[in-house]
Image (cartoon, rainbow, N blue to C red):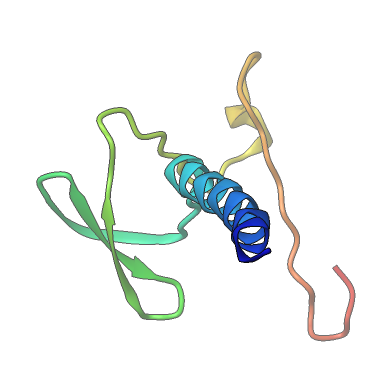
Length: 92
């Protein structure tokens, strides 16, 4: 009876644990801030809220920059993303 209970608990626990380990290895991390300095594979980033994050990057990280641009700066084949911020009166 105890053996059946242990198997019933152990098998789902192992499956859950292995899925959590896989997910953490594949997670995308999105950080917004200013790179203060680079120490080998570690990027020291000052976040928008003033805190500091130390990010160890892989051999082939993907970096995306946000820059102000004019309509005339947009060329065929470029990726364009936009965002809005809530105004004081509640409109965007």
